[in-house]
Amino acid sequence: MNLLPKAVDEFRSRDYWDQFFDKVGQEAFEWYSDFIDLANVLCKYIKSRDEVLVIGCGNSTLSNDLYDTGIEHITNIDLSDKVIKQMKKQNETKRSNMKWLQMDARKMIFDDNQFSVVLDKGTIDALMSNRSEQVVSDIDQILQQVDRVLRMTGRFICITLAQKHILEHVSQYFFNNKSWLLRYHHIQTSKSFALPVFAFVFTKITMKNPIHLTGVDIDSEMIRIAKTWFGLDDSLTKCVIDDGIKYLQRQVEEKTIYDLIIFDVNNDDSQSPLRCPHPAFLDNEILKNVKTLLSDHSGIFVLNFASRDDTNQERENCLKHLLTNFDHLSSIKLDDDINEIMFASKQLLLLNTKSSEKIFQQNFSMDFDIEELLSKVKIEK
Image (cartoon, rainbow, N blue to C red; front, side, top):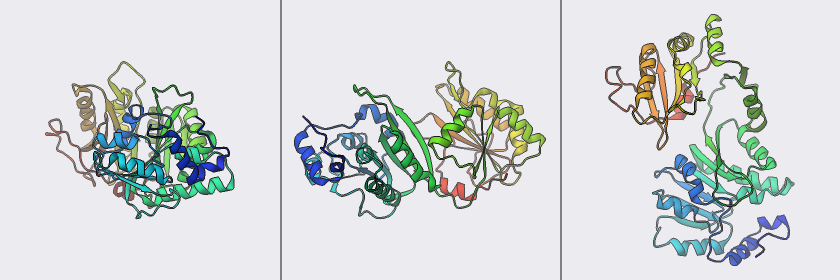
């Protein structure tokens, strides 16, 4: 059965997609990967409380599978009225809370900030068959609509083959805006699919005031990748190729002061349950240097902690090192993830804290407003 159009422009046509789903019939057509391959990534970024919009839903079972995991606030749109009627009929009894709407993703009629997640699996890939003026205009309209309907700290999750022309254009759109964070994942697919599949997760944030960042990495290749693919801007970010521990020592000697220092350092020992940070970065002398470099009044030290140690020993060890050097600690435990973001400061700041006497008896997680934090952080050169 030939499902491909005679010309790439047909991908933009409602008639083509109606005919496409006529040919496919009742059998679900999955682009790239099934839910079983995507579940770990999607369930990491989508929670039951989220309002989810799926663009170009087709007759994929992806929304059904998400719904069955407890994510019930899902709105599906597609250009094809035929497939929307089909999917609505299939799900109206078993998944009554799910919505199915015929709608053009270029011209959405939703309210601003209506959704906390927008999910695309293959729609942008299908539509961006080339870089013609019309195609680029169509993609930009979709991305503008995604930006408009997505609320602050919301995620745009794009399942894609990450072809060069698509990756460059989508990345350029979001990073020119200077208000998006990016994570990406290589999807290990069980299907006999020849091309690699990726999940790109763009998180919407607001940077109210210009900030000046210094990024340190021991590997120059990381800087090249960041500049080439992820819009790293030299005017806002100073990139340093150096050993992080040695760099901290030199900054102490130069009496530099920072308002924010972040450790996100992977442990390269695959046998250790401690995944992050590298143990060397928990040395008391290193943490003393961090404390020295932080502003007395507004300084925050942020540590990405991740461990697969079920005994909690690695976490307690990390907390002991932090408590030796800092007076106040708080943390955010990421839902369904091994990562815990720890905050340390010399003085009580905007974050809720626990006393050092009780800190080991409590899982001191809290609700967290990233926009509020970013609005209050001032970073000095």
